[in-house]
Image 1 (cartoon, rainbow, N blue to C red):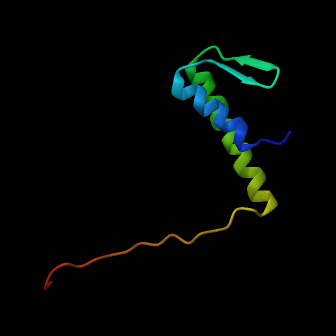
Image 2: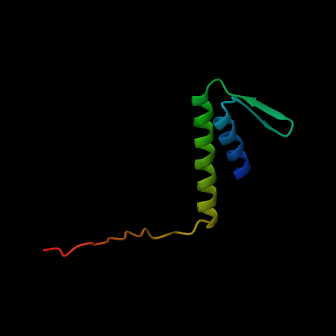
Length: 74
């Protein structure tokens, strides 16, 4: 089953509003606790990221570290 960003956004919105019930079309899922809802959102995010990585749609970015020197030094 493919995960979409819309699915993740619905869970994130439910977390933000304090709801434990999520609707998608005609389906309704009620979670027992906020912790369970958070775990479900994190699992969907991980699956979504894995699908994107396997499809090659995630571009690898090099991490940049910028160092600044604001003095005379020794």
